[in-house]
Image (tube, rainbow, N blue to C red):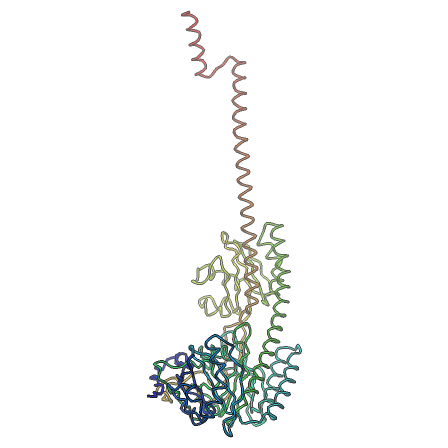
Length: 567
């Protein structure tokens, strides 16, 4: 008996509602194709409800592929699946995508392995081979353009232009993630009738954690028709099939509602992955349903990989230049410390250079009663920050780097005195005397252009009462105060390296002082023994010359004299 995958009860309305939705196991696919999952013996374990109608072969859970071979469509399907079954048994590699003709219908056949099953997807093809050849030439030209070194913003703008020309979407956006996981549209290509989204920001909650994971695992995602009904998977298994790598996986109802609120009828996203992390997205929207051919999507995926590689190279070059410049400053600082045996004086001399390396606007070097200010910070502000650090906040350690870009929120009682400084990098360089090297950034009052008010509402939705996607994406402005530009990873690395070098130099000097002290004590010990011995000898000669003897010696002499008298 074929059992459709049951639907879980909707989650309660909480702030992480979306994060709990199991979007990788929806139990259904989009309707522009069919899906069948086989075990190693060729037995069907899962099949979409439309598989038999689309493929002309009774592929239902429990049926055996080899037993269906006499039927012509089943034989054609078996030819595409057989090598994949060998791969499932470890006897071959998973084959490349292939074409399948079933009557008047054409399909792209894409295979992958999931849950120890071979998942075969049959996506309907609506373009001829000749039409797809034109797309291939166009994609090759786009790749050649993107291989040339350019500024990152220029690369992203070029990518949006080329993807829109290649796919025909109404809007293509380059979406870059920020340190707080919100995203900003930094480049865009769209038709003139659409409201431009460039410069708008979207909250981290728009792309929940499990969706981010899938964007890394499966780097291209097409939703061909937002309004189309889903096709359930039929199964005899107790658990759902993992569709993380599926090209036909159906869409979260929450995301469908989100896109519908934007007026989007079809979408495609291509991940920009750098060092295994989701750095950004190329997000494509169309106001009507649109199915981009599989081969064109794969070309878009390769374009995104070329883009990612070029961005990574650009970021690495910039980071290398900054790291090398900082290393030069660090070497001069440590040489100065080792020569002068004075961390405070050396840090004070090199504070301006370190400010430049860290892109800080001011610096404070303090130890005991000494205080050196660089970059326009007032003494009162410096003292307030030092007072707060000395009060022992929970996450401030005398051995570790501390950083924040929202200092007033941490030291509320002293915030007024510390104004306008909001960004802090604090390096504890002398634990015994409370030595700190502080690098600071001023408040950056920022006006954020949100793509709609970022908060969600609790209201009835397709899954019952819950937090629902916002219904308006009109520009909504927010002014953010009491923060500075966040410290970048390269700046934290540079500061951490400076702190490590300072601590190593300090430990080396302490070890040298301990060795010198030990040697001095040893020398003093020998000298003390020699002085006592010499003094005793001198005292003995002097007493002999004067005929004066210490009491024990007198007693012995008297004893000897008495012995002679008795004798």
